[in-house]
Image (tube, rainbow, N blue to C red; front, side):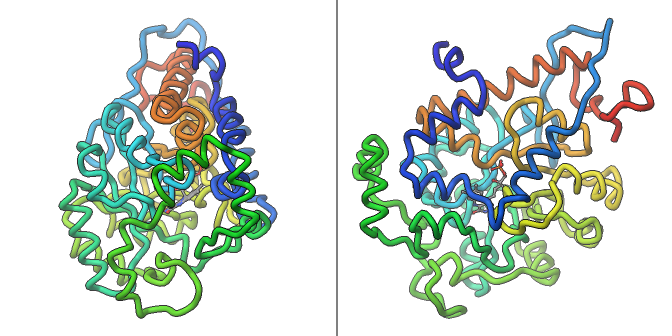
Length: 384
Ligand SMILES: Cc1cc2nc3c(=O)[nH]c(=O)nc-3n(C[C@H](O)[C@H](O)[C@H](O)COP(=O)(O)O)c2cc1C
């Protein structure tokens, strides 16, 4: 496969994506917040984890499958929710859904995606998760949940780390306004990337397809934010309890870093998603991989922990699993695939991750993932 020769790592794919995207789109996808220390720390903390290879151990083909919330997945990772994926490249939400359905891995659709649950129903198969930015109005919340359920999305993710918008200063510098306006600067940036501009012109400016229906009924907030911010509220424990009553499927809280919060919510959800939102919300927060360890201690061994942040290869997935994660999600990386090569780029991202895990498990003498937490010897850093 030629793509594999030229783009064998996610960073290779990332570089091509960057070349093909207008500056404001790249800045939207890539940015963190503040001085981006949280974003940098997230990757650095992963890099710091060593896993000691083993000698004279099994070289059998490893089994990469895991069970999460009662479902078997052939791979221990999936696609995290990303707002306005369709801005990165038209049709990205559908590409992610198709790859996820084919691979048997979850795809989490964002409330503020450029595709609605109904749009993706034909593509998503049995792999749909729906991410909720908590609507303030109960009738809108109930309608949105019913739409997600009716379109086949079985797992609900409540995002808890956006109680207020963050500043994302790089977006301001790139000339992005909220709501988005086609200023001369933005048009100039788009003109530098003809493939993106043509594809976007053909498919039309992306919109918030799930929220469009509620745009006129929004009365909860005033201001200049897009409809996503106008509709949402900061969820609290009572809100989570309400969701537990209203949603019959699996329920996950995303954006948890504090062990006390994790312990408090554990009885109300089916999994906890340890995340710092890709470093986009709070620059002083801990790296998710460090938070994993304290959260695992706080909640005990039974509740599944999902984790994300700066995963750039199969090695990083193994690092997270070794620190107590049961499942790993990726936000930006599959978008690099879509921007670089369209659908086959998303497939290629999965291939790179799978191939990396297989190679590393051979080094670790591992044939199945649940064994990764076992210390190879007392000082091994892969001890949980
Ligand atoms: C451009 C962009 C948009 C995002 N939009 C959402 C969103 O709508 N809802 C949400 O819960 N998380 C959102 N996230 C956070 C991701 O779900 C995920 O936590 C993060 O991207 C993981 O880090 P990674 O990109 O390094 O893999 C977004 C992240 C990015 C990069």
